Image 1: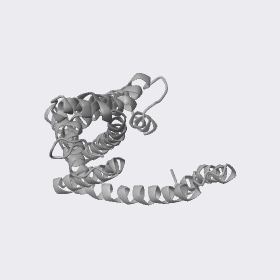
Image 2 (image 1 turned 30 degrees about the vertical axis):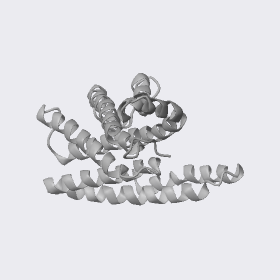
Image 3 (image 1 turned 90 degrees about the horizontal axis):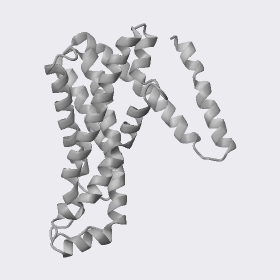
Image 4 (image 1 turned 90 degrees about the vertical axis):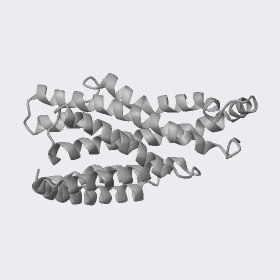
Length: 248
């Protein structure tokens, strides 16, 4: 695709901004900023990946994955305003998931140990885990506020902090898994996922593209579950004071 053809796609953005102005949604600024940022960030990443793929230096691969994890954690932590120490908990959860997933994929020789496989798969997996973390934290705050009386009653009856919020954590983890599970149920029927579509457009055999997409779906499911459950174990104590009172 030429840059000229790519520039014509700005028409979709312009139409969206005009609709926003027409409906007085005040989204024009956000759309414009998002468009510029997306273009600049993706172009910059493209040149960086081109360099990394050519060098095949393990240090650069690890550095890029670490940057992905930190940025994802900082973005997901915005869903937990008022909770302290959330960023490092998210980083630990996503990093643990990444080590487990990538360790299995490489040790079982499912993918090759090259930047062309490791970085894209890590990016997709970390991005999916980021969404799961954001949804978990959003629902955790909502569930805690809704179940405040129940939690305090359980604490007064001698329950531990974990016992008092067990149901809250369970519902929050389930909520964070909704997009992943819905995607699994409808993939191929409602949507053709990005990786599969990209491979087919690039000329790959459709059956081969489907195999890689199945791999991605299974990894996404595991990454969402592992990250959400680990984050729930790291975060629940942050809901209480040292003397086991529920924080406001």
